[in-house]
Image (cartoon, rainbow, N blue to C red; front, side, top):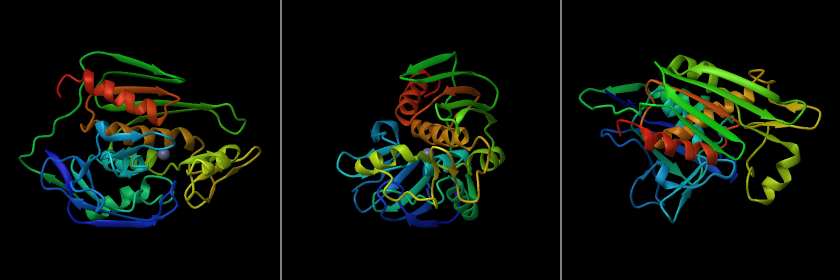
Length: 277
Ligand SMILES: [Zn+2]
């Protein structure tokens, strides 16, 4: 059975990378239409699918070839993490609000709207029949059939305050909300200038990101988890894998140093090897 939401829910704020006023309204979807963006910039709803990915620089962007929506991964992570299959996402502007840098405000809005099962609508799932492995640059991925949906993610970065963080996690709605959704995005002070020069992180602040300096970590209210960075990378991975358009089933995924470009390639590989497309 497929799941959508019962009622509309709106979130407003500013976009992380473009720094402009942003608003999204989640809308129930009657049909088996997956995640779609609706905007006055598009004639037709734009499916949040792998074949629409137009960029992966510090976030995942999708496009219809003319207009682009930036940084879709946190919002998609929330929808997929809650087990939602079909959702229309009305967006004003070109980027969802950064919220607090995590997926929790999106997840909370979706839960407040209420989840709605749609009897009679078949839920196709992505299952593997064998093991797969992938390497791209420094990123490594593997996946194998295994009961439930579980992840092991390793993040490491050569910085005294970061080091190596490993998070393991079985994907359930409760675990997603408690262990992944609250983890915030982060950046390093040494890269901020270059990011801004590239037109990225323009809306970034301590309200919506953790900033890692040479000798201190600046996080509003302190870190939410000692390994918040790895958990955020897991949140990102869940959001990027949602672009496959099929919920995961009976799969164990392990990722080392994942990034958006590699996540998207891995999602393509998963879909290619899936036994029940
Ligand atoms: Zn992220």
